[in-house]
Image 1 (cartoon, protein in one colour):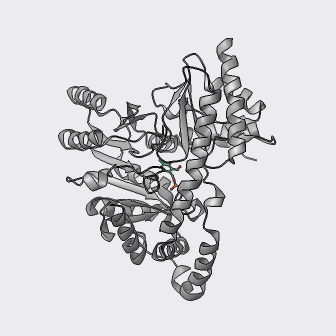
Image 2 (cartoon, rainbow, N blue to C red):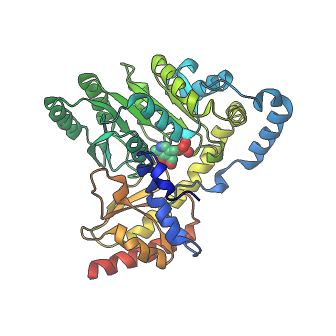
Image 3 (cartoon, rainbow, N blue to C red):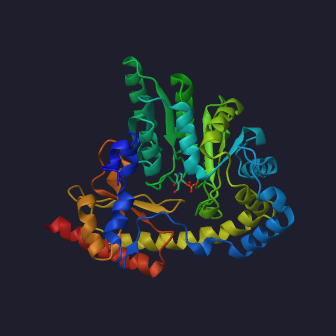
Length: 403
Ligand SMILES: Cc1ncc(COP(=O)(O)O)c(C=O)c1O
């Protein structure tokens, strides 16, 4: 046995070894708990019958191609279908501007690996998506945290910070944002701020990463336009995924960006995994051709809207006075701000003892803030469990306030 194998590890694994979600799973192991911690879609939302038929036909009829290696960029007819799908949702992208990725998690990784040197600055929301933060950390980015309020990332504050950075000779290279139904806060960026962000991108010369898993299925009609659709300067790197609109197990995501940038992203991806699984691409392509996603989405919306509303009314009933949260128009989460003084990280083991898990919100803030916040998933648990879990959490938080 080699002694202390950890001495062989690279420095970047420091960032991959800490995971709040893994810690939660460890505490919860072997117990019967209601998990509001993950971000899993409801399996009832998977179109299993249609996908089963498609998978069988794809292998029987196109097996020679579908089971073979394929180009790093993604198979051409699939990129054409994706381009048409985006067009139908008002987001223009040519097939040659698209790179198919292994989930949008890989899209984040590919973009960061291609663009970010150690010490480069990325501006992002306070709070923002945890797995993106972790990826940026692995590439040793510096952060500029920008508050998120009920209209999304506050671009007035962003402008001030950009001005300060410029005066100190610091160039902000990327702004990472999830403009519609942000994970974790659930809020969407107003149209005014979207315009402002793109103006700032020109003025301060940065690129914008628009991470957009949720705009294809909102619970109420919205008027938001995607940043990609508004982009005149070719500065928006758009990414999305089939994880929430079809099935995460397929691991299909994509990037749509200026062709020159997409060419660089393709080179980066090539030595990561050669290409996204060909079989998954064939299945997703057929699902698009047969309108499975478009037929299926209204059911997903209905299912998640009911669950969101059940969670919101349980929170209204049980959470302590002085708590606040945004009503998300989409996505899978509600993000709550509890009265100051409640520390959701410290309270987590107690919550798990009582049978409920959540993600303490602190991990979504790169500035160490948000100790009184938490993220709650409504897509996965059944409604009765959502109601029970929220009542347990409400009691716990009220007790913590009384002490
Ligand atoms: C904002 C955001 N980006 C990216 C992802 C990653 O999704 P996937 O890798 O399954 O496409 C998620 C999943 O929850 C997400 O919420």
